[in-house]
Image (cartoon, rainbow, N blue to C red):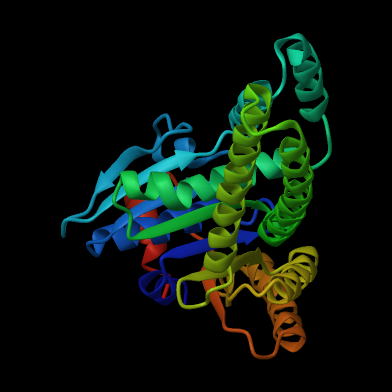
Length: 327
């Protein structure tokens, strides 16, 4: 199921509860697709990045080559830095505000940005802008045919995927406010005379503000359209066969469906063997009970399983072996 989703989509989100193996599975499916001849960008949005550890090299906020597939495919990786994304977001906002404010108020702008950096939602908004940038700009830079997102734990990811709609609506509200302000400004300029240089500067400023807001809204709308288009984008939930991951995964599945996101199914990772001693056999029996509960709560879902593997999942060979258990 996971490989089928990767083959038929442009964007694949892989998420779930923390510590269930999302990064390993995301890397394995990205590597598999590169080996099949596709150009793939593997992007981590999890603040606790592990791509670099997995590939035993430094992976940063700009895409770097991870491997070249035998059939002409290519795999690049990027770890989105939340703090760098926030600072870039605030710097962009700061430049815009300073352009529109008189110089003697620039100090107020800096104070506003300092407070905004601590405000709830600012990090999420910055991360959303960065995800949009990855799907459009950085994917184009590496010629990616597929983007695989290794996401943050469930709650954070669900909030991020809800944001494009929220931010688009919020920006639309700002545009409506600008329309009212522009009409008022036009009326004032008509009374004062159109040849007034200050009036002309005001009109130009209004046009620039509107263009910035339109550009932002359009980017959010494109991201929202992508995320909710089941022919282009899908989400696969990773979990382990334990009580809490099962319950959290069921909730995540319901939330994603509510947001209009295509959920390809579940991948249950690290399933215990039945033939390696009584302890593991007993554990597997308990895991099967949790799997049955998952199937009961989400009866139509596709559920794949991946066995517990010996050794550390590090490097090309280990990821290739992991990919061999996917379908």
